[in-house]
Length: 135
Image 1 (tube, helix red, strand yellow):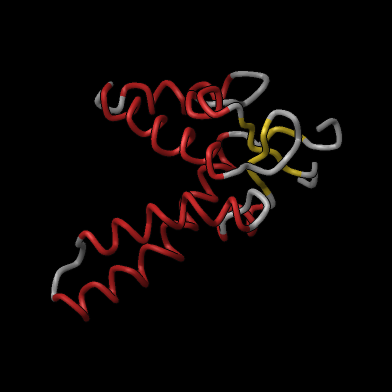
Image 2 (spheres, rainbow, N blue to C red):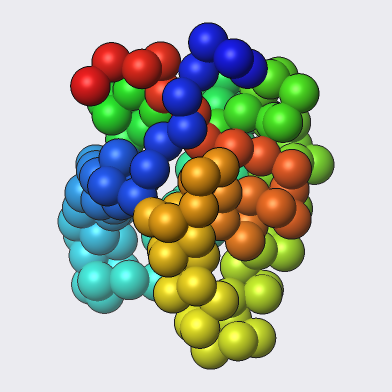
């Protein structure tokens, strides 16, 4: 892990925005064509599976993370597995939902202010988001 640098707030936000645009827009268009609705359970399921499975299958990257040069890693340096991503996305998401989003705001501040740049969902899953040091 010492050849990697921790990804901060802006890189992570940029990757999330890119993922939302790259995955969300086509899914919304497809859902509208198929069902006449902007959003339905199909788009929610595909979005969930994307955020859960793509990092497992693609060495810790999503499309947005790859573009931004960041990736999810376990604390031991290995890429995340399905159990790690379930903890990160499902349990982390439940914490954010139960706290009515307050924990999400706290997480944003944690990523922006903590030296280790880890959010609540990173602590739950034992992960860190890293980049190779190119600025």
